[in-house]
Length: 98
Image 1: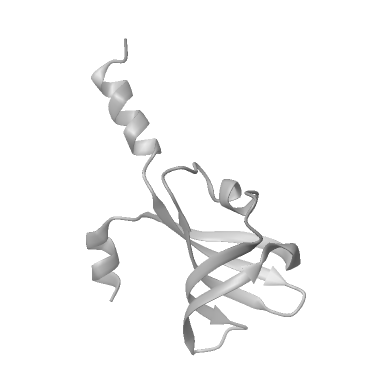
Image 2 (image 1 turned 180 degrees about the vertical axis):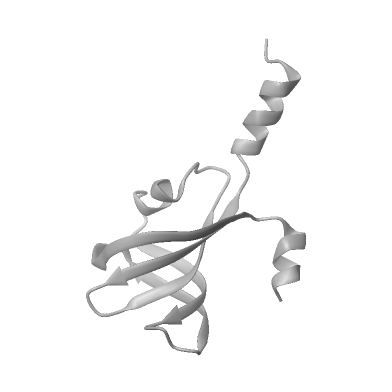
């Protein structure tokens, strides 16, 4: 039987989160947020799933000051990914960013 501590730990690990990433392709550099749902444990799970596109929000392209609200990158063209920051997907936290 699972102890309360183990149940709490399991539910903590299953939380959805936002990951701020820097993604390099042959044509550019994208810095933005990627959503990792509860059904995935890590960013690598999102990168390796069957979907051909990686959805990003709040994206800066090639160090531009302009922020795009949404970008879908074809995963075939991703050369490198670097995690800059991880955070929970709490609604409160999302509202604080706006």
